[in-house]
Length: 139
Length: 164
Image 1 (cartoon, one colour):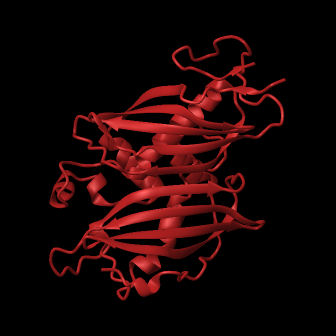
Image 2: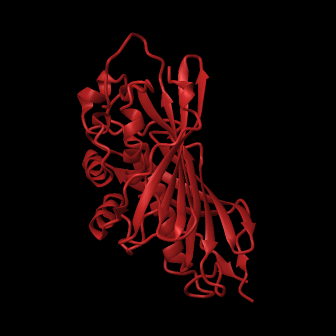
């Protein structure tokens, strides 16, 4: 069970990271996309999930990564992001719903560049009910 | 007048992508998601899965590829402004590989904005439930026209949007 006291809380904004041309090319190539210098539509997940590490690793939150499945994903892009952009991520716990002992954890991440809010990324994780007390960490 | 003529319900692309475990290893490196259920058969089975499964985000990435390739083939200068998917079933990737069939249909047309619903099927199962993408034309002229005007365009197997 996740601690519902975290709902509404935001993690501290990450330090700025540069979207390197190399990482964009590698991501595009892994999906067979033409490399246009534009950030591929799903690229931001590679920044927003690590930005949630502090939450995932927080023992008080109670998330066992070995029981997590990715359930839903949504991106809203407010403008185009190109390689070279410098962005920060701010992760907020939007909701936690418990259904039959399983938790659905909804996270929303604001991705800001120098001009402000560039994109929003929503990730819903399904956290399966623990069958036994487990001390498993991130897989 | 260059207005789109995208009929709601029309299939605008239909394509099949082969998926092999080496693709998942490349995606793991590119995305930083090294969860072993996407790479290692024993780890996947230990987690209660039938075999190695693709990252949900890999499948969603293939959907983005289908959309971008359609736009490029149709000569449409548009960008994705919203993109969502629910991962309904895993894409199981045995040692011999598998494929994901991706099909896009027009769901809504509003001015320069088009919403596409994309289904993805692998191993006979619908793996997404379905994905949605909102596309906004980036130029004020030439919205949703083909690069080749009235011709059938560069991709005969695709239905491409036509100019009025």
